[in-house]
Image (cartoon, rainbow, N blue to C red; front, side):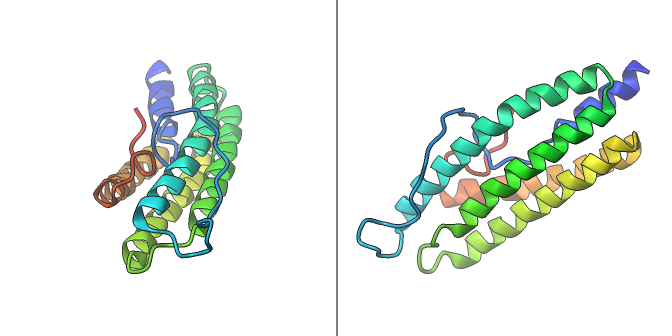
Length: 168
């Protein structure tokens, strides 16, 4: 039914993201010129550039997913979610490779844990969409929204402009 397809579309569109909405692709070095630890400002600048790059990769995936769900291509949608999982994992791995500013490890570790939870939930949603399990998918999306809210709050509090900011 159209209502069922709409629920799937809404459920699946809760793609894990590193935040922001720019499509600019940026290559980033993970250290300062002198090899010193990153300052908080440098860390935010480099992390936000990584997020901007990966969000640019996720934007067309979201569009493809929406079209697949509108046409009720659940197998294709599940494959597209799988692609999003891979892109999101690569982005999170780059973020985790950045040297953390001294003293900021606890908050950044918490943010990393939430990003990993979000990716795991996205992977579970891939299976739910493939199985056309609407209730399971909706439950996963609700759980991921809660994780994203916590992640967004931490990211905003830390000072990120791109990373962890919810996508519209």
